[in-house]
Length: 129
Image (cartoon, rainbow, N blue to C red; front, top):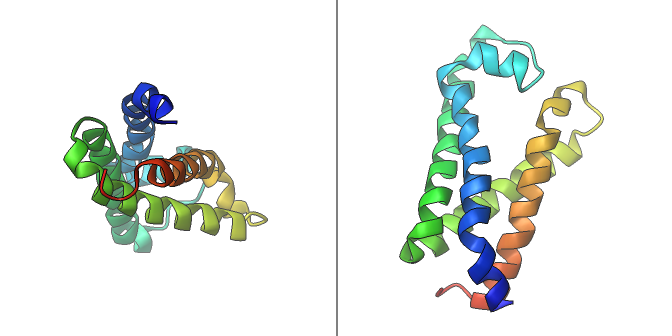
């Protein structure tokens, strides 16, 4: 398993970090992103929370990319990412029958992959890696 992570860690977290960082679009172009990517109507009264969520998740993606290269940053960033992504997957599954969850299914699939990868990573290396 160590060899597997040696071969895949950097690319896995760069690619999924880019996907996660894409949520930053909600921070800067909330109307377009909600309608086009989120498949939800734009509600002006929710702009602040939408933009706040976008910057928080977008920065998580940036830090995931950084963790791909900075070994000493991995544990705290991966723990935060694990918790954030686990909750996102839970929310999408729990609301799966609602129309508003449809735009989040691809992101939830990626997040579930990151969650599984991270759990195995911590099982192999522990939290002191």
